[in-house]
Image 1 (cartoon, helix red, strand yellow):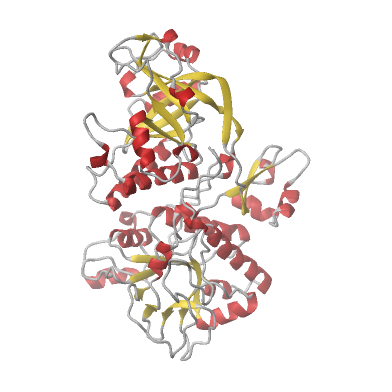
Image 2 (cartoon, rainbow, N blue to C red):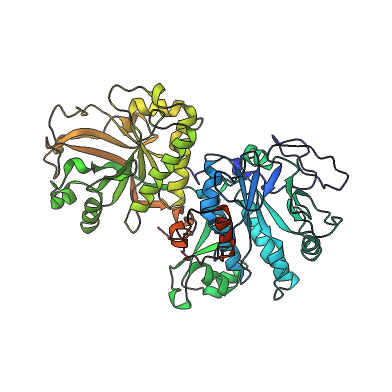
Length: 578
């Protein structure tokens, strides 16, 4: 792997718009300061709402947009928040969010950024993410310096993560905010609170005195064209390893954070801090450093197992015969029946392990690109959940192959392959694992032809084929299995499946055959592993709708739910280091 995974540079585009700026590829004149004399033109996504009731007879039209109060990482904003976000997703309604920051500490502000990233990972946030300035201005405990620090930390970190971020508030508070903080370069959502608007910063969205919301430009198109609000743009926090001669105060000074902020963000106490302890630094990003693994002079021998071998495994013999094992984790969203046992036994016998997921989706069994992507996300999330609390040292491979007699043209095209591979790399890397790709030689050629980057730059490649690949027609004694010629002829390959017909190995299918692989990299011995810096964003779980008690009744009855507090307490889940 030649550095931090980035399949798209779109996320690098500046995520906020300066007054008068026209971004490349965006609508001309996208951001201006609008005044009362501005000519209004009806545009796509021109009419907005700050909430919605997702019922067939009261739903928002897809030509409109919704900006939901999303609260912060501690509390939901609107009632049935995730339900409404999902509804917007499924009905192609452009949706943005307003974040009411938790102003308790700088650590809480950074938690709110993780909350934003979580939204973007789960839903199509195709409209801006706005910082609620009213919340900051109304917190009387904040002085102007702290106010500026908190707002700047949120806005800058969102921007650095490729998020189109802006500010939201009443006209009066936006004017005060601009005066006290000197922060004025972000696009605004202005809530009018007097006859004449006084805010002189740039703004695209306005809520007038009658409660009508309108956008002066199609921000969803701008965001899409510039690649904002996608996981492609996510950066990952730096991880600092405590040395013998430093304490937490040294670290805090080094990164311009308080000790409390660092401990808070990492969910640590002073007692947890010892030499070698790794601390996530939310104010700094991990460096673009090479992710590489120890090359070996003689390829390491391993095997891959699945339900096909069943319980017919001699683990003592496997530990003697193989230096690593790769297990089938899942097929689509179905976990392999032997996966849990295989992983547990590998751990018990100290055999380094990796996993693979057999891809179950293509153009023939999905109805559209949206359906294909949704199923790919479910498939990937199934793997990530299955790997929780398991020791995975080798890559996590996506197995892409076709059924016998099928052809690539009917199953995949460039758009589908790019979407599938991009999603796998981003999600697996974000979860803290090394992404890999498995296929046969013809499959590799087809996949490579459908993307515009060398596959080996983003995946650890594992390819099947060689002189001893018999498709199960012959027995190949384990001691006679040799590394495939693929490893010599193609340096981009890190692992090759030399045969599918090894016998006397310690495991076998109904014919006694086992796949044997050779790896030119020792993934248990990284030269430099920056996966510690590629930590997963926080997961913020919401109460299921059934627990709140939504019912089927009259329109008045549904609207009446608004009297129930929408501030549902969340479980605060910290990122896990792999």
